[in-house]
Structures are given as C-alpha cells and as structure tokens.
Length: 183
Ligand SMILES: [Zn+2]
Ligand SMILES: [Zn+2]
Image (cartoon, rainbow, N blue to C red; front, side, top):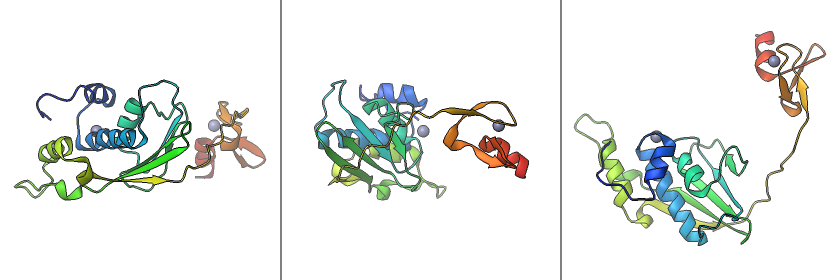
C-alpha cells in the first residue's frame, strides 16, 4: 500500500507492525486521539493501561506508541470485536474511551469490495471528530498482578501457571494436554 510520504510518528508504528494497513491507521489515529485527550507527554514514567476491545492490527499502534504492551501486562484484551480502546492514566487518575465511528469512509471499489487504499487515505487525513467518539470514562481498578507458582504438567512435563492447569483423573495437566486427553 503506497500512500506517499508518511508522518514521522507513523513510520516506527509501521515498522513494528510489519505492514501498512487500514486497521493499523485506525489504531494510530486512535492512540493519537487518546494521547491528546489525556494530555500525555513523552515521559517514561506514565502509568498507562490500554484496554483494547479487539485483537486486530490496530492494537499494535497502542503497543508501539503508548508502550502499553501485552508482555508488560498494561494491555488488556476484551474480546468484543469493536474498534474501541480505553486508555487509563493511573497518575492522573483519568481514563478516556476512543471508539471508531468512521465506517462510512469505506468506499467500495468497482469490484464491490472495500477500496483499502482509498480507505487508508481517508484514515490518514480525516479530521479526528469524523473518525472517533472520545469520551471520559471512569477509571477501572488495576488488574491484579499475580506472580503464580508453576505446576509441572503430568502429561507433557512443561511448567504451567497453576491457575491454567486442569485436573483430569486426579492429575494436573496443561490445557492443551487436557484437551487432547479428553478428545
Ligand atoms: Zn495490519
Ligand atoms: Zn501438558
């Protein structure tokens, strides 16, 4: 997808994600909208949490731009299938939810399918108000950070987080093993 010269802030996001696509651009604009609404600076000690209501390309923009990542535990996935993101700033005790409302910017090409290139161009240039609803929301309590012990799976022998083990015939197994045994 060639959209001409990209904004500087977008380049590392594309590098992180691996390609440029409409979904990533939704995330890029959404992360910008959340940053502005929360008045975030570049400081490293911001305690941010992103709650993503989908697990698609857009989420990678939040990982790269706000450093809210799956691995650090400050990216939470809710499987709702919506292009909506809540960013919580724990220091300021504020949260905003940004939800995508720009579906009408999807133009159909001659073949009847969405013209991804035209949609991507719109996503780059459209004013923020036409892309997102941004609302201040209540701050949710922090997710529990639990350090759990590991239990060795009785079948494959791999150490497994205790809460993710399944008891079968009196033996504790990992989920994949339990699924295979009971299949
Ligand atoms: Zn993508
Ligand atoms: Zn196992």
